[in-house]
Image (tube, rainbow, N blue to C red; front, side):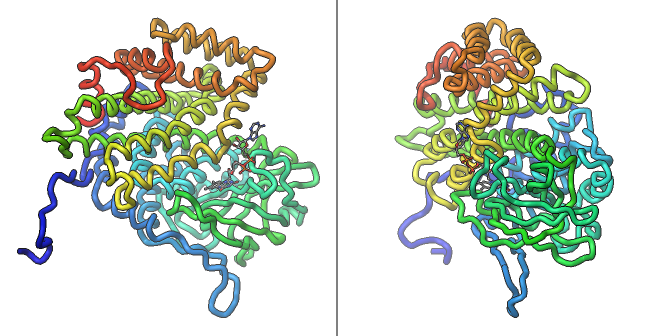
Length: 547
Ligand SMILES: Cc1cc2nc3c(=O)[nH]c(=O)nc-3n(C[C@H](O)[C@H](O)[C@H](O)COP(=O)(O)OP(=O)(O)OC[C@H]3O[C@@H](n4cnc5c(N)ncnc54)[C@H](O)[C@@H]3O)c2cc1C
């Protein structure tokens, strides 16, 4: 007997860890979606990223960063305020790797303008793979990337900050941002009395020379060790967006007082604080009274990232489930060869195929939106619809993925329990489900013509797919109804399904047809696997999902 083995048994019939894989090459639907949306030139770079993030070392960092949660150090040993949050070294490693790959800035050029080309698509592919390994640390990464869109409303501040934002260095030191090698940005909008209704913000901003003194609270402010936050507060002219750095211009620590960290269902590697501002120093971004208009530029991008991350979580769930099913035998046969398990896994694979095609199509629209009004209209109408559908489908999907692993799926040592706990937050923050539906209605009412053109284009791209024409007609009428708000969830879901079928049709027409048959022409059954796919289609879907 070796010292490491038990005296009574050998370990048999357990799947090996899903490690040391190229997360890109092993994901044909992702590769094809990247190519179809303009990212073909980045295949080698994405494969490098996929190998790195698919390594056992990165998986271990993800585990450690979640098991060793951040700690708030409000005061030092002598009672002096510190307001620092300590993270495990594994979290810092994850941050450094994401920053090194440009996940926090690669869609911008050095001046803070859109990078162009397929920058959005390429970054999204990386973000999706990273989300499947560790999602919590991506919160400050996504906020930093998105904040640049709001900083554009204050060109002098953008010029000052971009040289630090645009580096690929991660610098966790607690120091004034102008002195650092790289910086991260967070966001403070939500107060106790309202997160959706930010107009109810009570935090006040008073002029102090060319800057402001900000007093009030935020009920949620994530990633508190960011170097600065974009904060909403009431100024003389109304709700205004501010840049609030951790240090004042004279080098003293700004009065950003963390009260406690939230005890969250998931998203454990990330810290989310409750915070008080006591005449904290802030600089205005954009005009007074235009706070929502300014910060919505940022929120549009964080919504996009919520959808990408949820798709990445589902992909990771599918890959782990399929990998396990190919190794685990029950009744002398691998699970992956049992017809009923194949029905479940292939139906899940179809959902992921559509999700990744859809988010990559959205990212292509972000890439082109600057010079193409039709793509800008696609972004405006479909970002909330896609966030709604992709993010809200993730918890149910991950539950099914977890069940494919049986009891092992439910245990914290595996990644699926963590993914499952993580998944609801993407639907809740950055605008919850109903809020996304209302935002689709707003896009329609503000520019109905542009939205109608998007719908016509979707009809063209989905032409011939089962149920597509009916979905187009339904969506067109539903939003014209006087009670459109009441019916908005059904209409927004159909819009997202139609957009998914159209996007998938550009990548893989056969799978678009399967998606349309099972989701557009008929309502999908409540459970995965309760669809009647032909054996060849089942095989095709599973081979593509994990060669
Ligand atoms: C882990 C975590 C981290 C967070 N980090 C941050 C952060 O860094 N910065 C920040 O500013 N915020 C942050 N938030 C807050 C988050 O953005 C809000 O919780 C979210 O916007 C919802 O706001 P609320 O909690 O006030 O809920 P409410 O606004 O009260 O909404 C409650 C429910 O009502 C629904 N609803 C709202 N309006 C309507 C309507 N008109 N019709 C029908 N239904 C409606 C919503 O969809 C939601 O389901 C974080 C939240 C979480 C969970």
